[in-house]
Image (tube, rainbow, N blue to C red; front, top):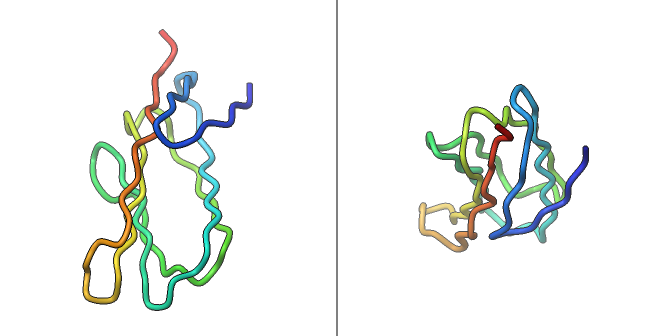
Length: 88
């Protein structure tokens, strides 16, 4: 089953499922995007590409959100989470 959800929404996933995250944004010079889960940073990368994707095991986190920081580490953006709920 494929679902598309936005920030603040809930994604219902089967156990042993990977969640695909697709990011589309306008690049910011010297900025870094951090994908954050309930256990901390899942991945970080420079904002050079306007489209990025990542696969995450649904069982490893209860939410995903983004932070974007400038070269000095100052926060530019923090998003609402996408909540991940596992089917029982």
